[in-house]
Each structure stands twice: as C-alpha cells, then as structure tokens.
Length: 160
Length: 139
Image (cartoon, rainbow over the protein chains, first blue to last red):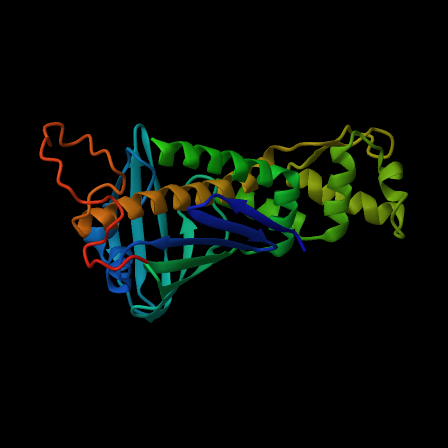
C-alpha cells in the first residue's frame, strides 16, 4: 500500500508497490513519438543521460523480438536488453527490460501506452518490478529520498 | 559470486515478511536473536533460521555465538536494490527530458523557450506574438 506521488510539473512519477509510473506529455503527434521510441536511429538520439551516447545493437520491434542497447559514458557503459511482448503501433508497447551489467536483477516489465491528447501525446510508462514486497521495502528504506533528489536535479536541468 | 546472483539472493532474502520485519527492527539498532524473536509468534530456532538467511545474503552480520551476540544490519545489499531501481528511474527521467527536446527538433521547432542562444545574430525580430501557434488557434 505504499503510494508516493513524486516528480514535477513536466513529469508525473508515482511509485506504488511493485509499479513505477512515469507519465509525460510530449508536444508531438503520436506517430512521431511512436517512431522516436521504436526506431533505432531515433532512439540513439535521446535515450540516456545528457552527455552520453547510445549504440542500438538490436531493435526487433515485434512480439518475441529482442532489443539491446549500450549507453556509453565517460569511463564506462551500461547495457540494457529485453524482449518485446506486445507491439500495437502506435498505441501500445510491452517489453521486458533488464540491465546486463552492474547491479542487475530479474527483468522488469514495461507497459508503454501512447495517448493522443490536446497539444500532443501522453506517454504512460508503467514498469512492474519483479517483487512488490522488495520494492516497497526499498522505498521505505530510502528510495523516496532518492526520487525527490533526482527530480530536483531534473528541475535544475529544465531550468537551464 | 556475480553481482546478478548477489542481487537475486538479496531479493530472495527480502521476499519473506518475517525477514523484512527483522531487518526493520535492526534498522533501529542491534538486537540479539532472542530480542528479535520477541514480537513474533514463532520459535527461537525459526528466527535463527531467518537470521541465517539474512546473514547469507549479507544483510545481517553477527558474531560466532549466534544466541548471545547481537545482530547488526548491513545496509549495502539494500543499497544495491535501491541503486538498481533508482538508476533505472533516473535513466528514464533524463531520457524523457532529452526526448522532449529531440521531438521539438524533429518538428523544426527548436528549443521551446524564447531565447535561442544558438543564433546569436538573429537580429530580425519578427513581430510574432510568442504564444501564437502556427495554425492560429489559441488553445
């Protein structure tokens, strides 16, 4: 029953039990947002923190298809990979995701929906982590603080 | 042990509610196995077993004479779980920020805000009110 509303004006973030919801409205038509998320050329242009580069190794957007990309930063890299479970352009994408290195764990499942709204496209990104109890415990053990700090940093970035 | 296995062990150890309660108790300070057993309706050996699982996962440390030496919380594996999820969230949050800018760029809008430092010599200030959208309608 742990529910926390976090985030800022641009991005809504809610952590509840084993689910993390991130919602953001982009000022762009739905087809374009879908393309930005499902084509390798587009994805490499925005995924990952500022100042890093991303190499898309695999992006087979169909049910059962794999995806993998490597985000490279100064002095290291992190690889994420998974499998597409549901693909319904341009409205819905379900995939598994797991980091391949660093502190890893059982894969999470991401359900991403694209909704046409006034002024653009609302992306609703729900990540279900493998264990409700563990996530809840992690939140009570200090995750909430981390979230708030993160979004203060994000607000700083947006203000620049 | 690889870090993946390590984290899986942590998840498994945390999956049990009694063990989470034990950790929550230890977060307030050291306690003996006897003290840990008090709030629970289970036997001392059963609590000892839970403590052993937590010990194997690196979440609890304890001296050799298990019954008498106090147990202490080791937060490092917890931090790894939090780090994993925090990193995921941070990654996505910052990426969304970049996606916002990239989508604007694709649509030829450039950065959303008034001052565009990339074009320092943009002396031709056109008489276009800031808020007017290309297709005229005000929202």
